[in-house]
Each structure stands twice: as C-alpha cells, then as structure tokens.
Length: 115
Ligand code: 5GP
Image (cartoon, rainbow, N blue to C red; front, side):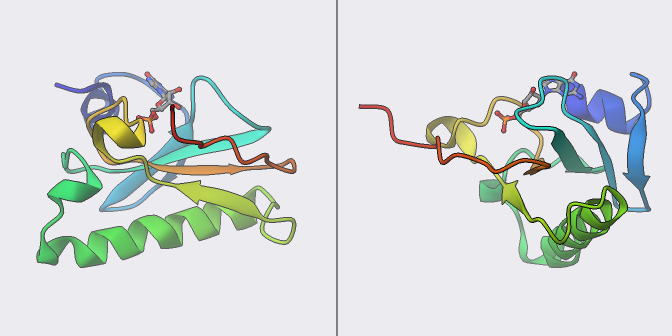
C-alpha cells in the first residue's frame, strides 16, 4: 500500500489541513516553499494517466480544495502554483494522485527536462 493510502486510511497520523468525503490535504514533509500542501483523493488512483470519466467530479473537488486551502492560508491574492506530476518522466514519486499547492514566496521555474 502506498504512503498516501496509509495516510488516507489514517494508519499514519498526519495533521490535516482539509478533509471532506472525497479528498484530504496535509503539509508536504519536504516543503519547497513556505506553503507546500498536498491534496489527495481518499480513493487510490495511481496517477492522472489512470483517471476514468467518472473521476471528473473528484478532480474538480481537488482543485476546489486547493482554492479553499489557499484562502485559509491567505496566499490566494499573492498567488501560488498547482502541480500534478505524472509517472516517471513527470517525476512522480508516490504512486497515488496528489496535487501540490505551493506558495508563500515567489517561485522559480525549475521543472526543466533532464538532458
Ligand atoms: P511527487 O514527486 O510524487 O510529485 O511528490 C511526492 C511528494 O510527497 C514529495 O514532495 C514528498 O516530499 C512528499 N512526501 C513523500 N512521503 C511523504 C510522507 O510520508 N508525508 C508527507 N506529508 N509528504 C510526503
């Protein structure tokens, strides 16, 4: 079972910033910026590439959760980055969909292809 399934099942205790019937959110363990939150579906879906048509509502919910968390953390007016990494070339390390919400500082562009 991947680490985010274990967090979703509450086998691993994590301070939750947001939870509803479909998604939950918590701080990234290795933050890249003052705000670095991960939003995950409670259901196990490996990556964006594995989504089905019926997951449309879930994905909308993930974005709306990110918007609400950004408001709660007061970074909505300064702005932020939302990022999905997808599979190997996308740099995805945890095989459970997660949306990165990154902000609280001006962010550099460092997602360059590896030569
Ligand atoms: P990816 O590279 O798959 O898009 O991002 C995975 C993210 O999950 C990384 O930013 C990493 O720091 C974070 N992460 C990995 N394991 C854990 C964990 O056990 N707890 C938390 N809170 N974050 C984790």
